[in-house]
Length: 249
Length: 322
Image 1: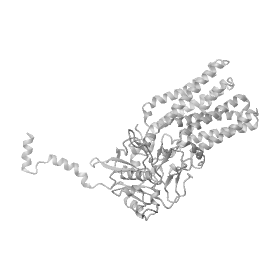
Image 2: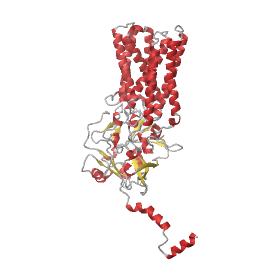
Image 3: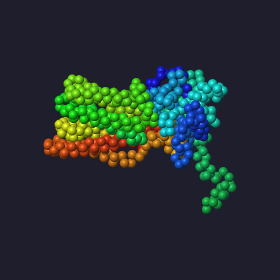
Image 4: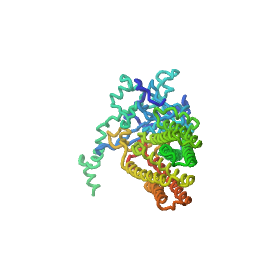
């Protein structure tokens, strides 16, 4: 059924901290590894090796440079992991003609039923976040499952019941939890750090939130001035003044 | 967007088929006596064949075509599903009409079946257009000009092929009705397409790399490193940029083929060609039909190839740059 379920109270999702993400791609690799061997695997590659490697990944880590409006500030580099945001009102679900693409009523996870998918790829066209990648090998659409085969897996220890990307992150830039519960750790984190939605203007109401980079320390901003000063100022000692005189001839 | 040939063929040829069925059905519903029984049957067959060919081509686009029947289930939410249902339902009044025509019955039952067929054909093309125009992620598709464009192009495609069939089978019984329909729909389609191209070239979606990443509050966002060194599904499917170099020239070629040639052909048919010469009229109609169809293919190719998808913002695309 590709009509959306009534809004659920439970909204499982991720919170991604752009302040501390170092762009190491561990989340992407751990995701690929788990989903290649887990219940939903294999996560296929069309050409894993060779001239034009091509395959499905659920996480893609971009790197951006941000040029501040005031030129006195140095530019900032932000690493940006991109994956399915498990939106509350996603078009990728409603455009599906077969009922393969669905949003779970109980926890809001957006999934694809591989046995029903006809591979028309309309859902990938409908997603502005690039969350869905088609597998030519399977002839069906693939997407992040929020590791649904981990988070409810009772054969796992409690602390292992988290998505593989969250487990793997060495800087703990990724957090998993119920964003529908205002008392959850993730919801508190979002409130405290001013977590935000990607492309809110498209109206899909992503569940996943991003935490903005914290303001850079003021010391940073003064660096260029300090460099300039060191180059020009020879007046502080007689020796330097003498050297400057000699070398300026 | 990557212009997949199966989808282009599907939208163009099924558009011609449903446009033809629409015109034929309207004629049968309003004035059944103007049509010859055999001509009407032949036209019905041609329309159904075009529609079926288009639908078969759409199956080639699927990764799991054997499951295509599942696409009929989600008509409550999905325009693609609605299109599938409408396309199949259209065959019912078409077959009923074929049976009535076969029996030579052009009475009220045929008129009712004709009216129903016209509605179904219109609805099918409507749904096809809405598959594209409902996608908020693609500015070039998510606008009010896409739906009338699909309807007009279906009418144009249908009228040129019906015109050719009329010249071949009916010895131009429906002169000057069909050339006139072709000329009017061609002129309207050309005007609409002009507005569409202006809109697509000037306009841009509200989203930017800044809103896509949410980092606009810090300054201008520039992609310094992509997540992958090679192409991936997204950049191949949504990042198609080949067309942009020759776009202007292709637009002119499309306009000449789908608008100028059919209008010229219609003028020739109505005022210049000798009334009795079946061969000349057939040749004229054939040129108009082939030219219009070729123009439709180029127009549809551009419709896909020039459309930009929001996901490319993450790869550093700017809305107004190539």
